[in-house]
Each structure stands twice: as structure tokens, then as C-alpha cells.
Length: 94
Image 1 (cartoon, one colour):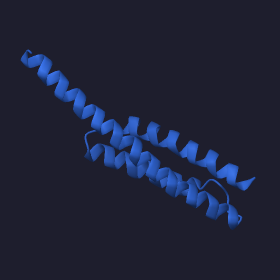
Image 2 (cartoon, helix red, strand yellow):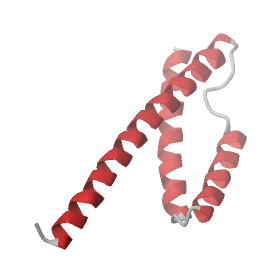
Image 3 (spheres, helix red, strand yellow):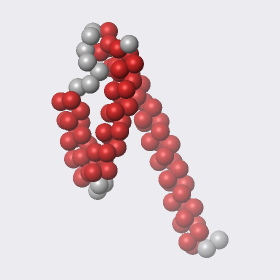
Image 4 (tube, helix red, strand yellow):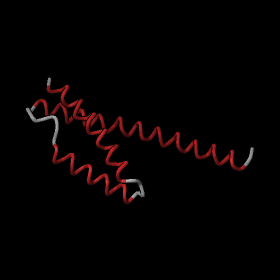
């Protein structure tokens, strides 16, 4: 096996592990956001909180900068996640 092939395999193994971490972390996050959605529904609170969402996006952009990640990518990612959370919260309102 060449050095390049071995390095490629190592990188891919790391990517696979990190992908698993991302999936399990998102699953844990959604368990909490679903609990929040049920709580909001039980107390007649709106499914969306634009102030909190804006704060979270700004926070994630700062974290991205600290982590040397494109903050625009981080914003788009969190915006997508938030839209899914709101969709789940709206289901609890029904």
C-alpha cells in the first residue's frame, strides 16, 4: 500500500467517525428540542422564538470563526436545523 493510499484510508476513517458523531449529536439535540416543543405546546407558547434563533445563529457564527469554519456555512446549517425544529414544534401545537 502506498503512503498516499494509507493516508487516504486514515482520513476516510476519521471522516466516518466524525460523521457518526455528528449524527448522534444531532439526534441528542433533537431530543431536547422536541421536549422544548412539547413544553411550548403545553403552555400555549409559539413554536418559534425569533430572538432566540437570531442569538443562536450569531453564537454559532462566532464559534465557527473560532473553529476556523466558514461562518456562512455555520449560519446556513443552523438555519436549516432551526427550520426543522420549528416544523416539529408546529406539529406539537396541533
